[in-house]
Amino acid sequence: MAATEQYFETTDIHPIDIVENLAESRDWDFDRVGEDQIALTVEGSWRSYTLTLAWSGFDETLRLVCTFEMEPPAEKMAELYEVLNLTNDRLWTGSFSMWNEERIMIYRYGLTLSGGAIALPDQIDQMMHNAVLACEKFYPAFQLVCWGDQSPAESMNVAISEAYGRA
Image 1 (tube, rainbow, N blue to C red):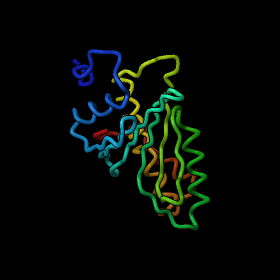
Image 2: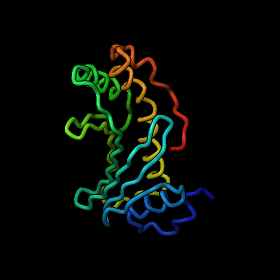
Image 3: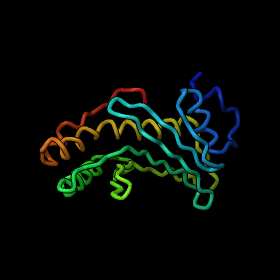
Image 4: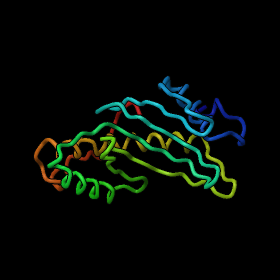
């Protein structure tokens, strides 16, 4: 039985309840911010990531935002934006952006569940896994362009094809 299967015998469960049960089963630190939102911390190989998932019943979307601190030098911002564009071109799902005011990098993804569709535990588990995997894969490229004096194109050469860790 998959780790996600043992918690769910019904198809009528709130998506954030699913996330909470997944976090508990993996011993991840989490905070149930409200009925429709949860924040958790996941250890990667490069750093810790904060995942926030929120359910919007209005637009029937489960939103995931994965963040990590990034304080690039002001003179490297143009190169960072260029490497972000190159990164987003390689992604099939989700996208990265830099929140300058907060000085954090974010990866975001939205799972639309319109028409009464439900999110399955394995879907949500894969969604969180993919977020951390994307951060792990492209983190070295972001670092090299900001502090390694490599061009955006050069820094993308280090984006590993598969990240391994505890995501």
